Length: 346
Image (tube, rainbow, N blue to C red; front, top):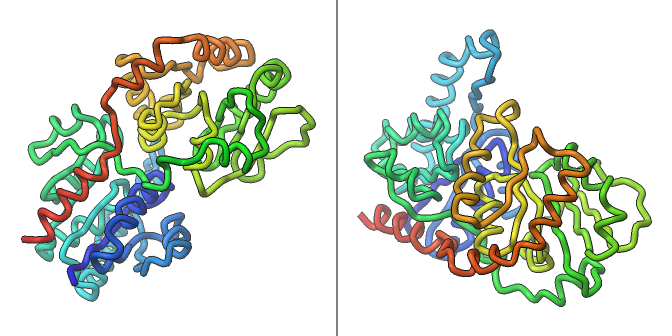
């Protein structure tokens, strides 16, 4: 049986798309995962995926002294990954990008193992720009991103099949929601303090007419007796969460953004600002806004009244639903699997 090795980690955004691909192919190939002692390790344990661990190397932005040892650490990490690949003998390495994919990609290229990489964001990060040179193809979620690479192929974003075709009534009952429209609010894997705080200041007004389903992040729940407000720290089954949502407020990480668009959920995106990231979420949000598929509130303008006004404007926008229904953005699994099988069958 052919073997596939996955890599990518440091955040759920670099891991869960790999899980989406893994779940489709798990009965057809032997599959493994290599990564660091971070979130990828615990997720693989949960899904029963054989895991190989190596020491990762991460660039710390704005801290020169912290980065002086990177070259030595990177060499050691590549050697470690090479030993893992020589032992596992995969027929293909599938990278989801980020710093945790760089050493495996370099090692695989040295061993002549085909490398496929997937870039989620509209602009590639530093690690993926380097990885692209070691890859046979770099698959992309956004069409314009593929044009930046000579080996770029636009496929769309990988998504878990469990997200789709869920029963709305059953999902609402699961969270104890009534029949009023539901606003889903979440701020990434660990939550967002600025979104949480400003949402809670608006709960009395919002919950007069709507349910608010709030994924607030671990340790961020508060005492509340507001009828219609449901808060959870984290929830594994996002398919049930999305099924409840008539509208959403979210960050604009590529994976969740494409999921919300593919689910045709009108969304207010509040992208991370440049001070908290390399600006990829701002560019992601602009792409969807230019196509009139979302509303955007910049984080620097976020406060109690602007959040309430932005949510009301989203709900009142009758054209966004039509735009979403005709946008043509779908799950990218089929095209991604096609590219994987093209290389693994050689």
